Length: 565
Image 1 (cartoon, rainbow, N blue to C red):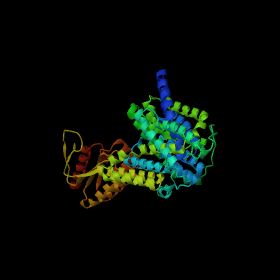
Image 2: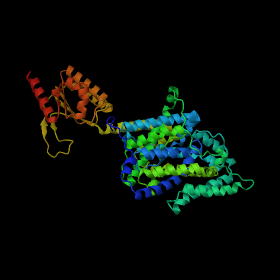
Image 3: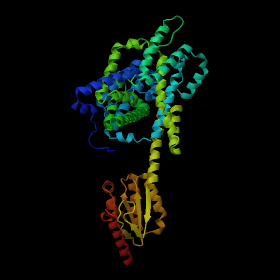
């Protein structure tokens, strides 16, 4: 991680076009058309499930998908609305309305750009896997629960947004099942499941929508039967790209929506970088994580001005792109153009799609998101992993995604600190010291340490947790009052403000008791920190040695001089 230096923004599109040829164009065109067709039902379904119209879902996939491919750091990433955002988008709209969603998405885009500019792309990848699995599974269950009304044809108008009250409402109304609607939903689901068994290249969701829409058109033409369609719920869908529009920003709104914006940004960063990591494993390419975050950020800044919802990389569509031959961002741009053509010329046909079929599409999406096999495997891991997964899952389902991500990140930090603390050791030596101990050196040099010299070796980063641990160890040994204390820091990669503060206290308290402090093996980065904090001046430049041999020789000399006096 590097918080300074040049801006790491190098879109893959620019490098791909340098050596572009007709063969790659043909592969990208085929892949882009296929992905565009696959993305169509998902964009519509995700838009509706998020609480907006299918038009908004398509606009998001068109504009967001284009920008992610044009400006991102992954060669094959396909961007657009995804199932992961359904829960948070639905809740924001319910609380703050569409303008609140637009502002939250814009702020999330700015956060993503800042993450990329500050070179934090690689850090996002280190969020513990159980946390990612926990809230992904929680999102999957929440998406599934939102589709019960349309799948069973319960006809409920005001379904509670909270998980437990929602299922309470379903249970009370299960006697109102519309069996014709349920049959349509079941047939749609069976087609989606069966299609990959015939051919993995066929988009099951689209095949299901085409077949069942034709079937429902015939059913609805019969007297006494009517199955709800997109047109029934949303009316005639527009076929024009909306003009950009602005919105009012003030500090009160920003403060209210900042937690939601942070959730969108972190969730989008995790999903897009996870998608790009999976893609890299298949294609052998290498994603520039910082550029990817900046590209995602720009997409989320632009999309709200056209009424869109949050954008991120989509694993399923990205893998479809790869399996159909896409290898450059051109395929992603073609996918966006295919969706644009559908939007301009085929929207009247979208009105005929049954809501029960879209519910079946999202039920299948939630099943694929659930990762139940992964959860089953994690259950055999240490209890800490199981606990983190369970807590994150329950917070996502019972409360909301904002709380789940915030507490999940807090758990990630706590787990990281705990593991660092467990792996950081502080060893105490006296009388003799093997210079090669703890290293791969085969030649052992044993140093004789004079009586009155104590050596403390810190093995690991000297940050606030370890600094406190070291401070407690020093306090327990104060009764011994040696003449010289050597701090061997050859294995200290960095030191933070707390470490510097504790070191200053140690030096001052030791000097007040006539005890010399000598630092050994201080690396260049740590030395600069100590120099800027005036620790070098406090301890004396001659008391900072680059090797333990020199430090022990100096300490022995100080003891000998003290004894003579």
